[in-house]
Length: 263
Ligand SMILES: C[S@@+](CC[C@H](N)C(=O)[O-])C[C@H]1O[C@@H](n2cnc3c(N)ncnc32)[C@H](O)[C@@H]1O
Image (cartoon, rainbow, N blue to C red):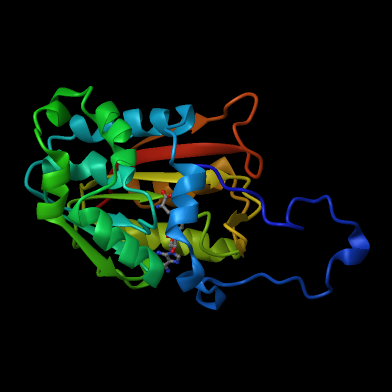
C-alpha cells in the first residue's frame, strides 16, 4: 500500500504557516469512523503493486515455513486490506480481524462473508506456495474462520493468539512516536511466546489522506522499528522495499519484519 501525503505535512509549507502549537493528534483524538474503506482500497489495493506483491510473497513464505496448524490467528488494524489475513488462512482455526474504525469494521464484515474479486490476484500470489495451493476455496475458508472484532490494538488481551499480522498500523494511527512503539508492544504481547508474526510499516511517512480526510502518521526510521520489535522477539528478519522511482509520494520505503515472539 502507499499513503498519499497529508497537506502541509511534507515540508513544502512556508515556516510562517506552521501553527505555534502544531496539531499532533494522539490515536484517541482521531475520528477513525470517518475512514472511508472504499476510497482506501481504491487508492491502495485496486491494482496489486510490485511493493505489496513482494511483501505478500515474503509473508506467505514466512508463514508457509513456520509449521503452523489449526492456529488462532489475528490481524490487527485490518482496516481495508485483506491480504495479511489471506497469508494466515491455510493454517488458521480462526482469524480475528481486529479493527477500531466502525466504518472499517462494517467493510470487513462484508468482505469476510464473501470477498471482492479485487483480492483474487493477492490470493494467486499466495497460491504459488504449495501450502496455500492446497486450499481450494479461500473465499469460503475466510467466511468460515474469519471473525471481525471492534478492538483497539492498545486493549488487546495478552498471550492470546498463535500467529499474527499487523500491516501499516504502528506507523499510521497517531502522530506520536510513543504510540507507534506501544502499538508494536501491544501486538507482540497479544501473541503467545514462540508465535510467528509479520509486521509491515511505512518508513518516513508524513501522514496520509483517505479520500479528502487527512490521517496522522509517524515518520519512523528503520532502526527504531527493528529495535522495538527485537525487544520482544527472536529470529527477526527485516526486508525493506524501496522502489526506485517511488511508486507514490509520502513515505520513504515499506518495511516487513518477521520473527517469533519471545517468551
Ligand atoms: C493505514 S491503515 C492500515 C490498514 C491495513 N492494515 C492495511 O494494511 O492497509 C491503519 C488502520 O488502523 C486502524 N486503527 C486506528 N486506530 C486503531 C487502534 N487503536 N486499534 C486498531 N486499529 C486502529 C485504522 O482504522 C486503519 O484501519
